[in-house]
Amino acid sequence: MNVVAATCLAGLLSLGFVGRPVTPSDGGKRLTVETLDGKVSQVEVLGIEGKRARLKIFVFDGDATILRNLSEYTPESAFLIEKAASSAVSFEEHFALAKRAGELGLIPEAGSSARLAVKVAATAADGAAKKKQVHAWAAGVLERVIGEALAAGDLDRASDCLDILATRLPEERTEAQLEALAEKVAVLRESVESKEAAEREAKLDEKAKAELAKKLEPIRKKSASGDKKLTKALAQSGSTAASAKTCDSAVDDYKAAWKLTQELLKANADDESVQESLAPIADHLVANALRAAMHAASVLTLQSDFKGAMEWCERVLRFDPGNSEAEAMKRTVEAASAEAGDRDDYRYAWTGRPRVRHRR
Image (cartoon, rainbow, N blue to C red; front, side, top):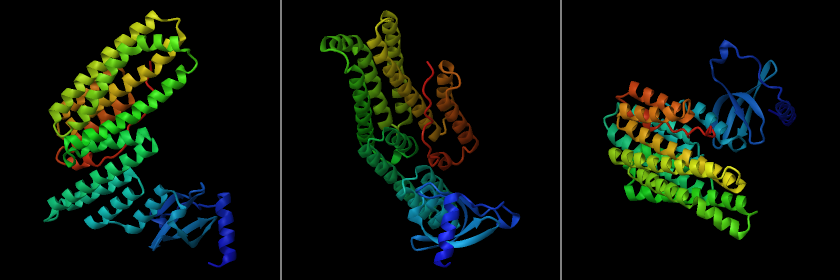
């Protein structure tokens, strides 16, 4: 393609004049991809040449072939292009894609390709060794991403990856290693919440702050106890019964803290500082109680205790009908139960938790 044609094509792309109707001859090969500057187009992948992709771009009623740097695309689109070019079939090809997704920080995509790799490995003579190789790599990727998220202050990403590591690959880390990671995530969570609390209380004088702290102390103490037990439950993920039992105890602490919260709200119905301070505390209690419940359900699912996992989901739904996390976990348990002979389908289903603010 000459310079003039390339310039014209770039202009058409920037205006969004791309994408003739799909025809049967396309064979389902067309992908929708996005560049880092937000331009969306439909392409067919013809191949990868070093760090560039040769793509067929569809414009008006025709098409054109271009060579474009993969670095110009979002990580998701770059991986989609590389995956299409790979047409992976073998263990090595699927594993290579999993590693590439891991390098790009694409956790769900890495898990999906890893799952395909272990499925292929299951039919090989050295399948057990290959699966062990994937498990070890997967744990390493998750731990790396946890570290990166902690450094960036990304609590949700760190928490999600810790949950995946602890519930899907607990045998790849010792209890002490999991506890160390869980404590680091807990420290970040406490830091975020403390900063928010300080901002809310900034308008109060020292006397009012002291009085507020005294009122909140019993709730914070019971909540902290639940947090400590939840951290311990994450560390105990390799021992299903112990982890589930600790989750149960953590939930009891959060429920007790919630009862104290209700009592304090009732006794201070006209105190705005108490009302404002208790709202995020209540959110924390609900969120971590749900985390504990979903963790218990997850570790039980990995060990094929589907009845126990479903009971945890139902416990949540009894006090919060329609809770999105519990409903999602319930579907996961049902799917895992249907594929009870293949734990790796569940092991590598790497998705983050849905986050919908609790309805109070």
